[in-house]
Length: 316
Image 1 (cartoon, rainbow, N blue to C red):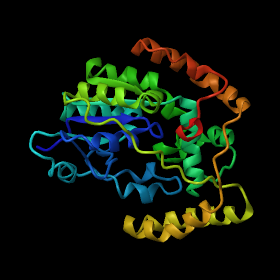
Image 2: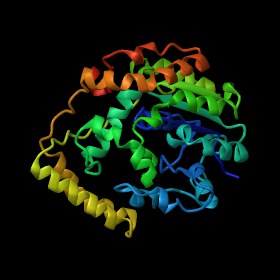
Image 3: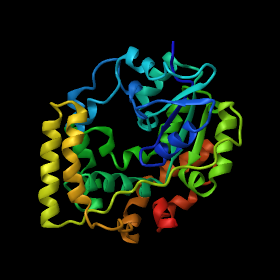
Image 4: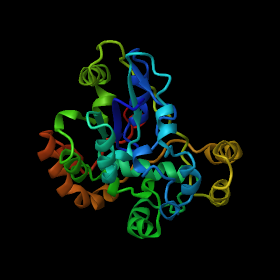
């Protein structure tokens, strides 16, 4: 079997891509391509169309690797002796995947990358807004739609708030795996103390330290202002994504490039989340943040501040 020895399991928009690329530089580690196969989110069957009802969901689901033979094929070219890994951040949120992982690779090591849940949610919403898929221009209004969207069958990436409840997610994971198999990594540590943190992760995985010390620069798209022209472009993107569900993924990606280029033109930097908006969301995460601290022994009280730390680019 060519199955992974380690998984990067969370959370979306928390630095998993940067960590994936950084670890891929290590000569004793082999990281999958594609980075995010989502195999353990499937019951070795195609993603359920009833859970892919949001804009772009059905198109994206075509890229999920659900067949075991195809999943093992992602690691077939790993050099002899190299540890194999992949990065699907939704594995942390998707508690059903915890059981599937244990059934197939019970000794796997996992790196749970987590980020201030409000900053993460804002980044998640901004990602979908700038890609033309999120029709709601107001972040808090989009958050208020979450329950209705879940009921309507939107995919996990639309759960801006729920995917940030790391305490309950880790509590479930720790009920299935020993804590020593899980390395909890804060996004802030990855950005602010890169070299030391990468050495800690390499030591956790059992490969030599001192061989990787950098993460790639954040690939942040231009902000897309809410203008009449952009609204038309975004509506076209959503219609195209729906049609793209019936085309090979590479075809739709080629077609969408000029639309995305038009959306990103002259947008500038994403506006910071207002203090008032952040204060509105703090109570949602308070209890879960306390649980997270109890489980990990790490102080996350800074996440309860009225001003977040923002994205990597906002801190340079």
